[in-house]
Length: 389
Image (tube, rainbow, N blue to C red; front, side, top):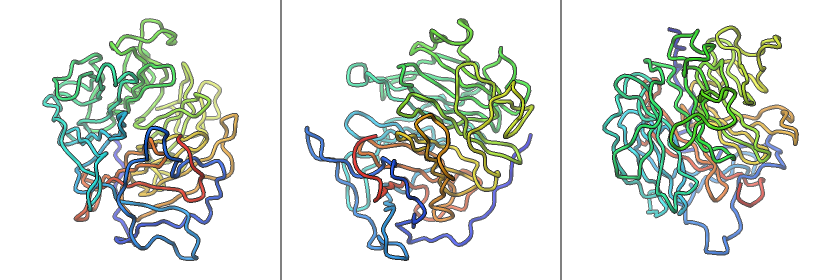
């Protein structure tokens, strides 16, 4: 088992509400306040701190604390009314955040606790995905660690989950856990290698893979193997993924000791683990589009807005922004923000209003929690224009 150590935070700004982003000249960035919806005004959010302009006088990014006092918020999914469903890894709770708000932030309430969750180490309640037909079927999907395995289940909120895919290998670390609907209307899930490295290259194992399934948990039509849910293989521990405007899929990947990655994920792609970490220079494996030293990244969450990839990083205690070209290659150098200000960052999601939501993960056993932790942050890029992502 190879678990990288966690390093304490230094120089963290407790009262910081804004991060200078003077280097972020991202004309294509689509985060920001949208125009009012024809059906009504955007939701009301808490007022940012009075410290809204970074040193130098040019406001670039405004960060607002939307909610606080959470425990290891792992994933975010939005409902049609703008409220967010947030999972807590260790408690097994699903929280609803908003759309109502008060003087201290958005209203947080417990929707339900998943009784079958067996939290241990990095295992627990992980990903959550809202059905594209939620207004009709009221269905959500969850990925969680149970007594003997990791599994995916569907349910109506408040009801007992019905497992649709079981037998995903579990371990104290490397449980994956990402969950989301792709542009094709199918459900994707990311799994870890469960600390059994060869499983990532074993096409008969669900470990170390990205899976693509129907809403009933069956292998999706068009998979590389018609009888298998496996979409791609050779992953160490993918937790966050998403799609750009051209329907290309991207995923963040935890490396071991050398390189963390962002990969463009394609049908049947082999991403090399455990035979390679980072660039392989081997035609059998797909190279990452971006890689960082592990101490600067270890990113769990990934949000995609048009041509911008935004990561949320644990060990690196920062977010990275990566701009893409029209063809999906990287434009310029990645830019970092929030470095060391809020500690470990885990989930990242684009909200219906176009802003970026990020969660902290300082209660996960490797962080240095403060009284307000864990928190949900909202980032608005002042130079990013308006419009929904």
